[in-house]
Image 1: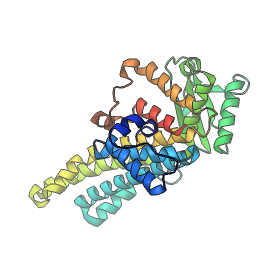
Image 2: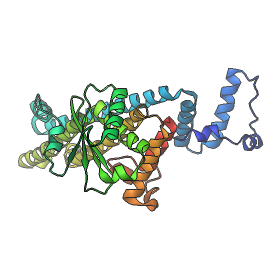
Image 3: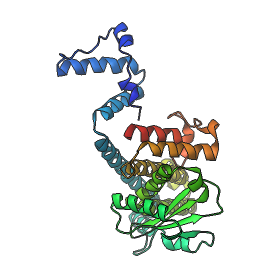
Length: 336
């Protein structure tokens, strides 16, 4: 998605020189739309540029809370499509190897058993280096997290842990809204302001509220099953004779694990952006999430890598579990 400034900061004088005059207060609706189309057309050298410019202009006209809700809804729809794609790919691999029964058994085998949890606070309790945080030993941090949980509508406040010997800046969230834990490193607590820590905590709480642990656990199960079922189906095709299986289906079995990996990475990036959008509703100053993300990037990679994946056409972005930081920062500032 483009930046709102691409449309809002149009140089009117430059447009006028190109044959598009300034808008006047008396323009009717149709004239205004035609003028906007001319402005966008002059700035859009490709169809992709035009789509971005139109999306940016639409974003600029909407209230910020509506923008955030729309982006979260779009990300939820994309997540559903990704899970559906993984399920379809698994069913196809099973069908190639065992027909309708193989497809059904492959999908059923990938579903988590009833009552299983994608991770819980118990995982952190068993880490000997994780220090539990209570009101007595960190009252300000607990109060900060409690306020964010209240705004998020969480029924139960997650357990808080700190990794005291970890100088890296990081945060983790595990579990479901009813049994969750958030872990912060001491490096993050000392390297960021109170407001920036609140922004990072809000992002982790957004993951908990969105059920991202369960979503990613399901995606991981589907990915593992695709890898297993595609290998079994390939072995069965070799036993029956390669010529008995159409070449496109053999090719699908060969590339299915790679496709599943890319889909899972894409799903992870979608969930990160959705958590960013949700987190903005939970903090007082939405801009602090952008500054916190920039600090994390500088800490982990230094200034030189901040624009390493700056172009949307860079294929390397498809191999990342998180969106590039510059993309996340632009996304947050558009919604701030």
